[in-house]
Length: 74
Image (cartoon, rainbow, N blue to C red; front, side, top):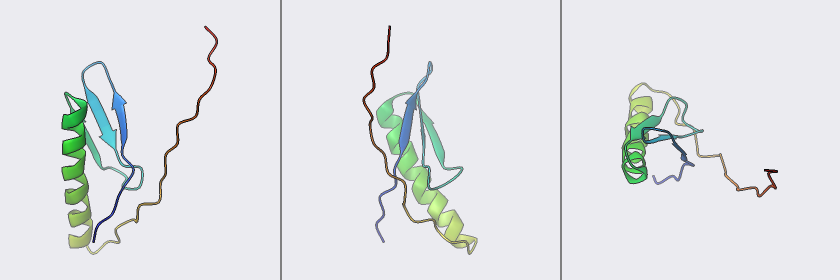
């Protein structure tokens, strides 16, 4: 089964963090954005495998993301 989960990527002072809103606790950290994406892909697969092994339901991907443009006063 293929599924596409929304992944949120955040830049920090030391690198990049990634998490999956539909899979609580599924996170990854990387020095680069590409590394964080690679690691979160692996984390998703391991997270889903762990849920299945524990006999728990795998949450379906339901989150969506949008960018909203706003004016920010200087």
